[in-house]
Length: 303
Image (cartoon, rainbow, N blue to C red; front, side):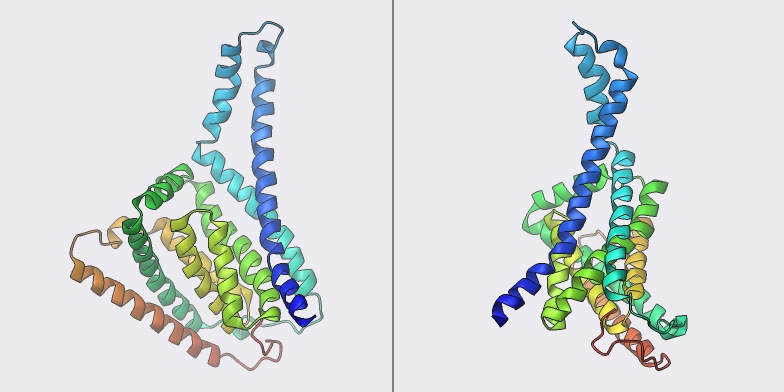
């Protein structure tokens, strides 16, 4: 009976991800149908008996297909989905985990300059580690990288727009942290040890990205986000780390990434990245120790 209950608890951890996926599908289909409706309304005069099918294709179907390749349109869909998912999962998180009366926490009891510095250094190290993860996967299977590159271009990462920047730096971190490090990990740590719970939520985070390259480095980053959230005792901390990571990934100039052929230099950069991530973790943990005592931080590290 205990085993069945535990399996049920683990399967329950999948519900937040399934809800987010369902919201994503609904928003995507709704956007496409709305686009079709607007094109039909705009060109309603051609929809008469005996209308030339070629005119219908040129006036309605082609604009709709073009929209599906337009980075602004795709970024808009992503932003709308993320906002709705953040509201839905935020309500779930608040209702299930934050509805009890708790003392109001001061900012100093959540974060301090040591922790901010640790997160920044950790993020910098993770940026280069994730870059080398992508490079390794590209060597293993160039097709994976080609798919990833086409996806990035389709959503506009070659030419960052205001909508994409807002989505990437502000909306997505809040939405994804609520889904994975919020509701999912909250339930997971009740059903298994933290290490297993962190691996599970990070795996689901990677799987949610639906391509090998992005999914693999999302898994790695997800592990760090889970660790930051758990050790710091607050979801706000992993949201901040996620925002830092996406801010650098969106706006950092390309010359900061070495793309030469020197193997020795690549090894040095990778080793420096690992050292930076390690130093960031150490500084972050030191910052946690320097926070004022707070009874409201749960002993098991839930955030």
